[in-house]
Length: 177
Image 1 (cartoon, rainbow, N blue to C red):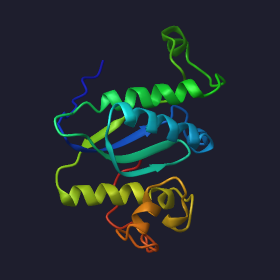
Image 2 (cartoon, rainbow, N blue to C red):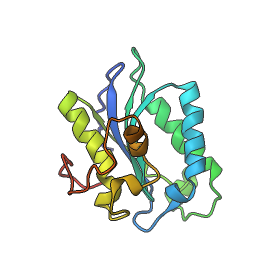
Image 3 (cartoon, rainbow, N blue to C red):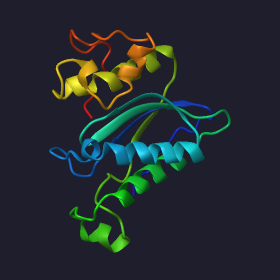
Image 4 (cartoon, rainbow, N blue to C red):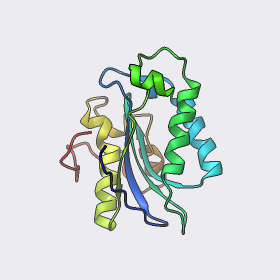
C-alpha cells in the first residue's frame, strides 16, 4: 500500500482536486449539481471552512478552501462530502468486485489530491487554475460563461474582471487533472 504524506497545517489554505471514478465522458457532477451543493452546504454547517475558489466540472472538481484556526482536518470535510453525494445518487454505476465486497460505491476515486498553499503567489496560481479549468477543458469559450464556479461571485465583488482568461491560461499550472 502506498504511503501518502499529507501536510496538516492548522488554519491552512489548501487546493484540492477530487475526481469521479469514471472519467472522461461522465457528467455526474454537473448533472447533479444541486445535490453536490446541498451536501457541501450541509458539511460546512457541521465542519466549517471558507471557500476561496471552487469549480465543478462534469467529472471532477477543484477548490481552494481555508480551514478554521487550529483545525487541520480536511479529511473530515471530504469524507462526508463524497459519502453524502454518493448516498444521494441512484445505484446505477458499475462497481468492481473489490468495491462491491467493501460496500463502496463506484462514484469517486478513493483519494483526492491536496496541496497546502505556501504563499500569496501560490494562492493566486491555484485560484487561477481553478477558474481557468472550464476554458482549458473546452467547456466554454469564456471563463465567465461556466455556471459552476466561484468566478462570477468574484467578478461581482470586483476582485476579477468579466473577461479574465480571455487570452489563454494566465498563471495556469503545468499539470493536467
